[in-house]
Length: 604
Image 1 (cartoon, rainbow, N blue to C red):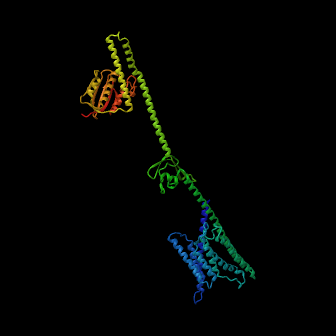
Image 2: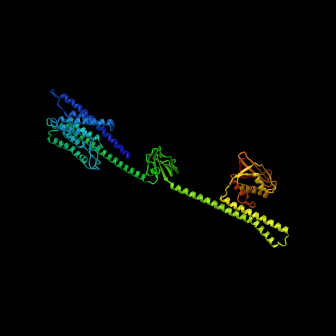
Image 3: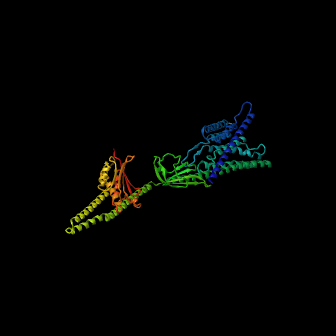
């Protein structure tokens, strides 16, 4: 509806200016024709100035006032030329003041009105400025009507008794057309403007019909008062002229009313649109979410205060930052002006038109940095708890394994020592010397076994807490293996120059445990070999001819506790790793178990 009203108001304004331009052309032509007639009928002794000459520059000035040139050099040239022609009209009118006073005054008022057509005087705050040309045009129109109306009824009077006019008919008609054209040239600011209900414009609008009707009524009464005889043709002509004049006035009043209604509606809609735009801007800026409005081509139209606070942008945005595709959303990283990124919950929604096609988009971002920080903190805390649970589970498993080992492996030598000592103590006198010697040796063996087990437990605790450090030095492997084998039946195949870079005490424990494992769980032959590798390491191999290690035991072979195996291989793995090496198991061919220890070779 608002669009149709604006189109209607624009169309009426163009029609008004078109009529004003036609009036300017008509006045110019009328002035030229009457100026030529005056020259032809002038006396030989010289030309007499006539007000008709002033109609030519007046019509041209009016024509220039309605040309669509409003800016730049062309606009200033049009305004200056129109003002010059209008002042020329006033000067030419003033030159005939002695001989044609009424025509001269009307011409001067018209010229001054055209010169001041866009001049407005400021008034109180809130009121529309006063236009200087309005009273001038009203005065010129009144004089022209006073001169024109008696001429319209001349045909109703007998010959020789026609009423006299204050100016010629053609001049009065030209001045009336000039004033009407000047009013129509500025329909939005002249007397046709009706939004202001106080001041001179309202007075002009209310007084203009009375000023137009008064001469008509006076002439009508005078005509019928002095008429002595009236023919039908004359009556018809006079009545037709009066009806034509009244019709013209009615058309002008309809045009005024149409412009008034269009102007009222347009201003009302503009005000309503401005209020809605202000409300939308206020709503956009007051939102706690960061909002960006884009057109159909993803160009930024506007952003709110929260968006600038979130991104740190202060300048006008031309290109939007990377955003989710329309119709989607989720966690997003929004770039800031300083190069950092802020986590947001982003959504991109399309704004459809009447046909359903997107006419724009709205991107909304909610700052979730605090939520992300809380999530990360919670995740870190959960991971810490998980690690704590793992440590607790490992400690619990260690406790269970240690309890199981103490119950099985430690209890056996202790019970053996206790029973042997009890037997030896109770039957000491009855036992022969060789039996007492054998029982004492068994007690000593179990005691050594128990001490070895306690030393392994102590080493286990140190390995578990990470307090074992290696002091690596070159260690000859042949010498170390022979010392660890003692008198056992072990085949040793190691060159004398093969040395490993390791802690001698740690390496001795490793070899002793490997040999003990082979002797206890394997079978002959037991072979120990060592040699340098191409990558600068030394490979120590302990192989037996037994049945090998079962497949179900292999995953936990180097664990803390294996029932019946003690802590040997667990200590081996940790001591080797503490010295920068590694240990692994493989099946021997054709049968048996092979444990391989890799260590850094000592320099030759």
